[in-house]
Length: 582
Image 1 (cartoon, rainbow, N blue to C red):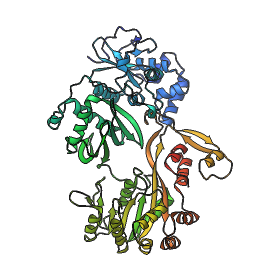
Image 2: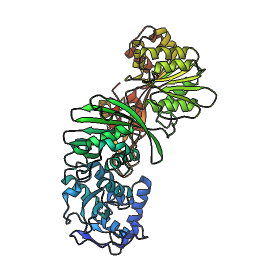
Image 3: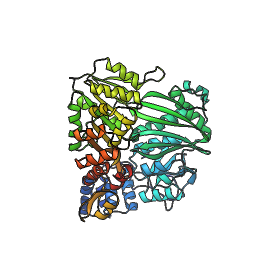
Image 4: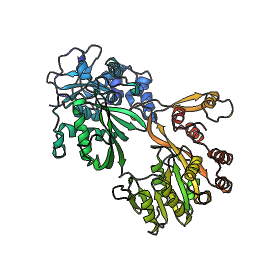
């Protein structure tokens, strides 16, 4: 039986539409038919929605054409399904708590009870969101019946049951999350041979699929004394996914360890492994790390989408002046280009963008990486393997005997690797690599600390790129003015007293109401010229190198961030979050 033909449950607060089944009428037409607004007001709102990329219903509310309750009635009539008035409906709080805060925030939906046939009633602001229905079916294992409810009623209910939808960072979990206490747990010793219908495997697969769909970079399985929180890192920020009951924690950990070919019996020492998967058509590599904690084993899985192609320097946020400086350095037949920054700052992505730029078939390119994050045609790529004694240093030595033109070293971690990389740059090879330093001038100091002689370093390195990743504003962003005084007080070099026009995060369906969608690079480019090389020769401090470079036009990280604020690409708060004053 389809949803459209189901009888209306005889429960207070559930209202049947005038006609059953999906209508061919547009939302705007239903608004006019119900007498909620004129055709002119609706047409204006529809135009506004197209210009901003927002949903028509959301704009109708924001423009004051409809109330949230009126929109719910419009959608119920449009789709021909039952509407729930949550001010009159007696919500089953235990059912409402079957989902976690991230679900309500992400989908504008929350379970409110069961119908006469035992189906889960899912109150939704947008009943056409099939992904929400699929996810709650996977989470609860129940058949789902969608009903329309007002957006503000849904979120008011979320707040009433203790789901902090405005600030997930303050969510302490409580009793919310996935209640799987009644689900039988598969014997962990048999998980490797279990079928795809096993509850543990279905749960883990659901988490992995959700992470890929959200564009997450990492999945954290964090145990506590009561349960296990599964948290996704999306655009650099943590977002709650599901909560696993304590009795299922061992099964989830064992499943992840089996997938990564780790020893499930060893729980006292850290382990790391990897697994390759095909999820939603994406070739995914998971780097799995286990950590023994006082509450049990924690698991962190780094997601590497090996099927995605590297993008150009412009696409990662590098402005023309910086891009030309890097491309000029890479056009030389030999020398060194270093990318530096903390973990998770996008260094590998920038290296691959550089490789894509020079990979034109005229030069031999060989890499040694940990791991190989993207597979590139025309490039010989090697992965380090500690068990086989394949390190960055040994791999680099082998590459030097393989007639390379361009060498990419995933990371310079020690003095031996640093010396070999510098030697390669001085003997006719273009060398690309990464370092962990806070800014570009400190990369020079780090290599000197590793034992590289100043006269070798001064000749070998041509360009250093320091970077951070800032969240990119979604198209739903809104304009705002900030005084020059406030900008200067936050470390931005702003001249004059004119107010600065910036953009602020707003929130819509596309960005999961965060106001941000994707990330872009914030860069600091140090180009080595004769004067800076002279400073390196006399072992000048990083501050001295920075002062000279700035006097020659180098922009510090925060200044590049300011350029992107003025372009409306990111917000002042994001730049402040990811950069240090300088």
